[in-house]
Amino acid sequence: MSEEELPIFVKWLESLSWIIQTAEKFPKRVRGTITDRLINIALDIIEDFIEGRYSRGKIDILRRINLKLEKIRVLLRIAHEQKILPHQQYKHGAYLINETGKMLGGWIKQQEAGRT
Figure 1 (cartoon, rainbow, N blue to C red):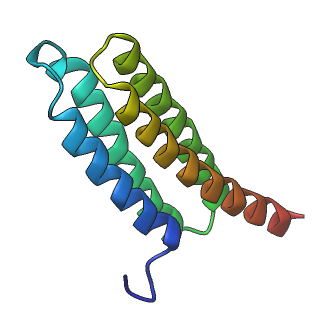
Figure 2 (figure 1 turned 60 degrees about the horizontal axis):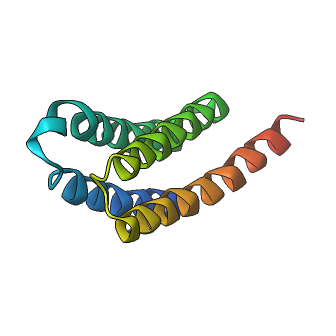
Figure 3 (figure 1 turned 90 degrees about the vertical axis):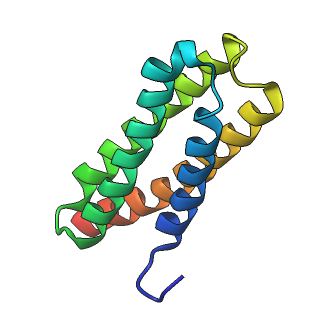
């Protein structure tokens, strides 16, 4: 990790790696749907983090990331309920998403405090 990389960016890279590796093991019947959605949203989030890092108006970008994290939570839940994602992996994925969400929440609060 370089000095320039935000801890949340590094954390999401780890989460992204897990999502890709896990989703690629899903059955073929869901690869065009759940797998693609999970990976695409996760990749969108990494792009949003880059944009947020270098933009002045961060708050809207950070809220957009928060919404996308919720979408990933729901997709993982669906995969778990459909018996595509084993319980232990679901728990691990939820943990990764929650950790990123906590960090994101702190960043959002910091930005909101700076607005006042």
